Length: 167
Image: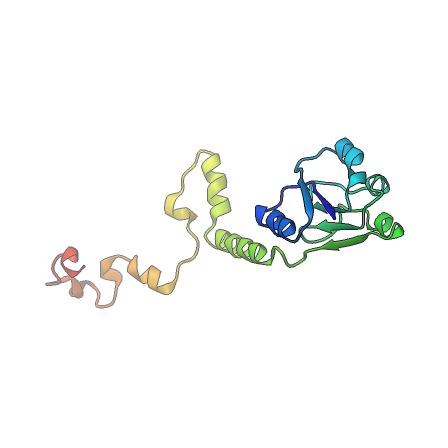
């Protein structure tokens, strides 16, 4: 089976396909006109989101048996045209689950620490320093209060010695 990869995929994907005996032609960034000219020679097409697999591409793929989308959804593939030709269309919806979760957590942390607001103020030529910080934990707030405001009040400062001696 001859497979055309028209978008950037991980090398490990290409290695797996090759080790299974498939002939792989890795051509990321293939233009739409070039795809139309070359698709006839392939049994399978692997894409991500850059390649638009139109009805015209599917019609030109005389030998196509399967179109695979490395990622969620098949919105860049004319699935109806493929179905009419008996071509299987598949995707890998769980392939980016970890990346999506990591991105979600990082965005939540960014919002909690007011990073978008700090970024915008910096680009506006301002610098608000600590005014850009988000909420702090109770322990963090306690550590950053003035010394006399901590437990024991001002009397705790008498005979306490130098702060560096306790570190």
